[in-house]
Image (cartoon, rainbow, N blue to C red; front, side, top):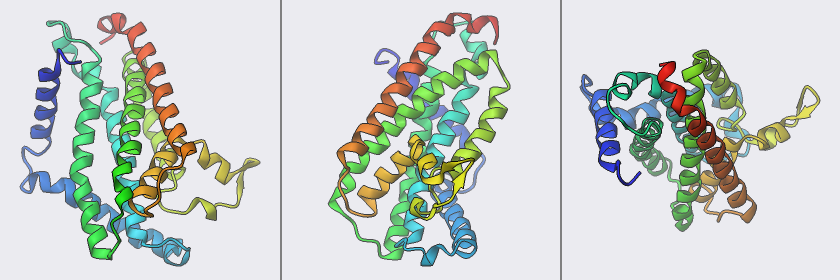
Length: 259
């Protein structure tokens, strides 16, 4: 990775320039987009689900924290899936480590996420949300989410080379994951069951829920991360990286036959 750091930097820079090349507002959209989406979600869910009276203090900040982290995961994995296929002309001509391409997509998604934190800061200031010293610990759930997303991205990038239908299946899966990540609601409200399974138990097996909750805990509630939460976030990232890297490494020599 250190050897190809300049290539990685240039690929991220290229994607950043291409994304905003024909945009009048440019990078400002990285701030405006989450703000506008937060406004839409707040208007819809606060009315339909009566979230303002559900015991959630400062619902806009609660919503923004979950939205930003989930958007990062969605963007990182969705763009990484086709990264190997998109790089096919280059891979057939020049030797480049294939893992660079899904890694670059995850890095680019993280850059967008960092810019989007400006929107979170504005919402916190506007709503009068207090700033806590525990915000420093927010780096941990964010960093472990990055490696969790990278592991998933490596797995998806390898699988999509052989099975293009994964791109369509993943979009449906991410939509379902969105509603099981406790972005719009407090999991304590989910007291019903689905297919004999308690809804709160279903939510608790979702790794994204733990990353979002850890981030909210440090940024919004001013509470330190519990040891159990640190363990879950770390283990999910390690397992994801190990599985993703193994699958990618064992299949990468056959990529050229299918791209």
